[in-house]
Image 1 (tube, rainbow, N blue to C red):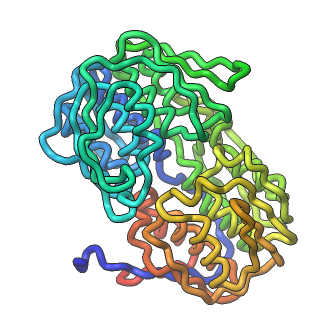
Image 2 (cartoon, rainbow, N blue to C red):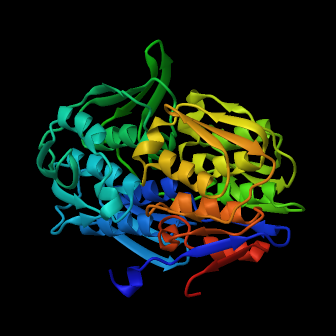
Amino acid sequence: MSAANSPRPAQARAGSALVGSVRVPGDKSISHRALLLGGLARGETRVEGLLEGEDVLRTADAMRAMGAHVERISSGDWHVRGNGVGALLQPRETLDFGNAGTGVRLMMGLAAGHGLTVTFDGDASLRKRPMGRILTPLKLMGARVLDCAEGERLPLTLAGPQDVIPIRYRLPVASAQVKSAVLLAGLDCAGETSVIEPEATRDHTERMLRHFGARVDAVEAEEGRVITLKGRPDLVGRDLFVPADPSSAAFPLVAALIVPGSRVRLEAVMVNPTRAGLLATLQEMGAAIVRENEREVGGEPVCDLVVTSGTLKGVEVPAERAPSMIDEYPVLAVAAAFAEGDTVMRGLSELRVKESDRLAAVAAGLAANGVRHTIDGDDLIVHGGGHVAGGGTVETHLDHRIAMAFLVMGLASRQPVTVDDATMIATSFPAFTSLMRGLGAEIGVSGT
């Protein structure tokens, strides 16, 4: 391992109250899709507020490799120019997505639907993540897996068909990534492609496809929510504002709730209902969160969140809420540790196949810092006592959300909390440490 990639431990400790107004980075899901669809659309797409984390930059590189013009003008300001649906080029080299699970899975759909043969790869963490659930519908559309690691994992070579077969596909599990991959594969397809989801998942792909000019219908039926895309749309470049990422906002938000005396304003946060599960849960726990300046930008609901510290109580989080807050469970577990009483989080099987086995990683982090908890099948129960001892070191397993969640814990625990590595935080929230320090947090990173 080179010095540049060596682990850099970080430690957070309790200090003064957190106070201030900040804007967290642009939403990662929106940023990926802005580059993908901007690179397909005719003409220029101007993107304001793009997340410049490593995951999104990998998607930018992939779109360049497939013939789109992608240019960074200034911080967060990017211009993308494509040549229309059907005009992507065969990349000459392997597309390396690093740790970007969303990027690689969406790009598989896009490449397969354009008849391209592409080899996908990633870092050690991404190579462990299953790709079968993406490949199953793509095979039904005519794609073939030419080569892959055991268990349909990366590195993987996927060959798209010359004529994509339109399908009507029912998701076996709620997954916005699978839904999006199928819809993207259907873009260069004659006819209509439909996805049926038994539980609603984040709908950013549908919203943005409409923003660029595609016809996408969503109707409620007895079998579930049916999303239908009319193939070969004329996508035209559009200006696009990327709102603040609610998954990134979750960290300063929870920190403000658990650090006494804190009051923080989080600006221009996306509050799409399919992503608002954490807000609903925290408010059920008694959190003081006020929405101000509500508006709609680029088809997405946005507002400022004003957060004030206070007492939290344990609640039960139903399994059906998981799709709307799947990335926020690690930091919710931290909030639950400071709450009074038990917080029961049900139906967390999806956490086992994220950047790490997040369910196991969260449980180990809680144990290392003296927080009582129980894992019962796919349920996590945190036995909150109103305070946390801290003093432990948390293994992050190359997972950015585990690292940030337990650094937040350290800001309110009795003893500092250390994470074994903070380097991977750059995948989604490069300015996390500096932003939190700007609010008054005491976070130290090895070598800085």
